Length: 287
Image (cartoon, rainbow, N blue to C red; front, top):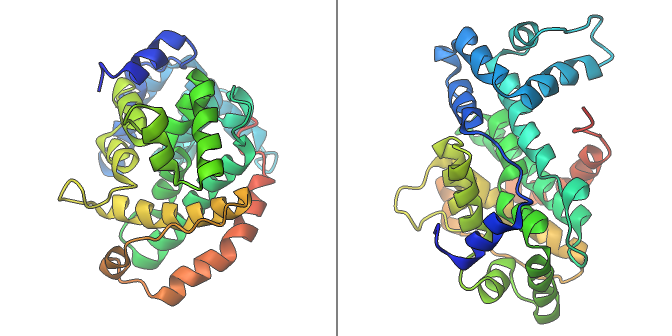
């Protein structure tokens, strides 16, 4: 993977945000709330000044809280492990948010961002229904499940525009168009590579790598199954936004493994546009 020409072009672009591996170590700590050591966590976050200021600003941005948070320890104690983790992942999202840093011209950043939000909402609803995953955690993972696409947007915008144009002109699925333009590689491999570069937790790497191919590695986790189904639902929503009316068919076996009815899936499909609209109007990352 490291030697693939597209990865080399990404590295040589000098547009990729620099995130130290200490960030990944912090996320790994936050994934185990029962073993959460606040002093070690604060020590790790203190080595990441931008993340530290993001946590404090996130709390102070909320005018409903009748207090000011001045220190990192104060913020982490108030938030707890779960909420600190959510803001940490939102921090990555903000760095790669298409509307902020995207450089492509043809690619529709706003519509694609709505797809990511749609995937988060659908995954949250599925996790809540099945009880097979932490619904808040899977929601945040949905926001970065297509991190490989946003990396392309920032580093190789011309290639992303070609993918987007090929997808629209020929009515191809995104994955097929990517393989044509990127010499066999897709946003999932790019996403896996960047996650490993940043030292992100393995369960995030697994979701990003396998959310389009949940059975390919032979030991699919519930997180991957949920994300695949959520992404499939939201992809159909995204295709409608683009006006291609392409239908992406999810694996019915996966729905059955999650013990979900077709009626439940249809309910998500019906609710998704309105729910995405609600979140799209909230300025989540203005802190």
